[in-house]
Amino acid sequence: MGQTLAEKIWQSHVVDQVTGLPDLIYIDLHLMHEMTSPQAFDGLRAAGRRVRRPDLTVATQDHNVPTGLADRLTVTDPVSRAQLRALRDNTAEFGIEMYGLGHDDQGIVHVIGPQLGLSQPGMTIVCGDSHSSTHGALGALAFGIGTSEVEHVLATQTLRLPAFRTMAVNVTGSLPAGVTAKDLILAVIAQIGTGGGQGHVIEYRGEAVRALSMAGRMTICNMSIEAGARAGLVAPDETTFAYLRDRPFAPRGDAWEEATAHWWSLRTDDDASFDREVDIDVTALRPYITWGTNPAQGGQLDGAVPDPASFRDPGERAAAESALVYMGLTPGTPFRSIPIDVVFVGSCTNGRIEDLRAVADVLRGRPIKAGVRMLIVPGSTAVRHQAEAEGLDKVFTAAGAEWRAAGCSMCIGVNPDRLGPMQRSASTSNRNFEGRQGAGARTHLVSPPVAAASAILGRLGSPEEL
Image 1 (cartoon, rainbow, N blue to C red):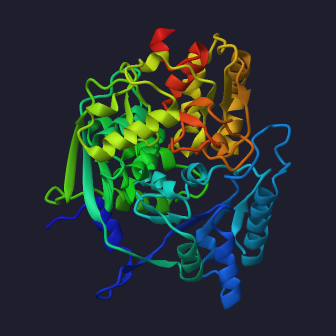
Image 2 (tube, helix red, strand yellow):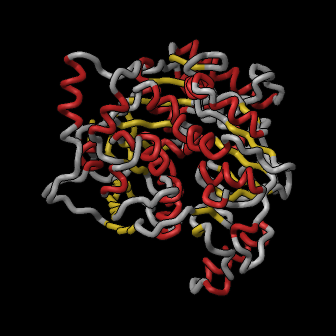
Image 3 (spheres, helix red, strand yellow):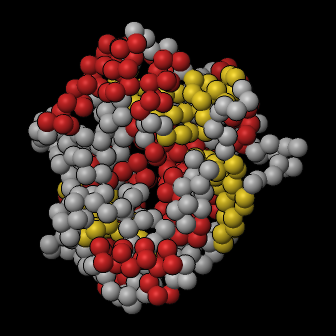
């Protein structure tokens, strides 16, 4: 029987198989940031161990960093300062490359990995961060891991991982004009639910997926975890190769030819079967937004806040009731009439140069609504420099938005960029959990174009309304 892409990568990385235990898998690339690494290094130190392959580990500072251009290097929060210092000191002690504040390659871990060409097809990639699935866009098998697993990878360059089930999301039709990869993945999650991918590695397939840029593929793979999946991936193709060519850590010369020949073999066999398949027709898809407190509680922007009574499942009904209380929404309210206080553009979901260009296209020549705060945060320092070289920063500031430095920023409330209680945001990030963007914050997940239009309108809206 044929194999799926995920199964091929897995089998080629098995170091040891013991009945009753998870497989021992070789790890090609270990990415780190300051939030989940201090205890791992303490464990190594206490056991007298070294890092097995420091050359296969790369670290960056991203979650806790300030993004204000003026105070970029000033970390006032004592916890954040301690975590950033610990990563700097630990990587120096154990000989690991670290891209910290002030470095040209600093940025969000899931932005800089592909950007530098560190993430490549066929690799196994891990990081102490749930959105490691982002790297699956290049045809890699990428997992988020916990602190004890971070220590194990550092010490052995291997990891015991339980077997997974396979799932195909078959996307039929072409994305209509104005509809983005973010809308696509929000629609998928709304269809299958936050537990629909539990225990599975999802492979995204179909012409609509193939037509996406690498940035779009990263967006859908990034949010696979929000559907409960272990990982998400897209088979590599010419789009992948064109993206990787000439990147700093990509193969070169004869090594490039050998690599691409191998990468072409990384596709699901015609006679392979998936444990589960889901079909989604995007022909009539419209811009999507979330209305609740998990990514599955969403709908097309043309719709209205649902009535919890319309949910047949008692659990979904109770979750909707609770979400509407937290979000301060009334059933039947048109989504396009919901006012917003803050717009956030950025994160490992939508902080790439393509995302910023899409926002600039909407903002160009238009001011944001008085009273609305808009933060635009590049996913990496390299993205920031490129945006500035293209003059995008001037478009943003002319519209009244704040142009900031690279970091996770308002995606997660562990740095100075936070919402206040009951403030409502249109956010291009990946999670709308209670308190995710700050205590009492209310988050609507949207695409970059919808975020930009909402900033101008002062309410949830789309570019076609301008």
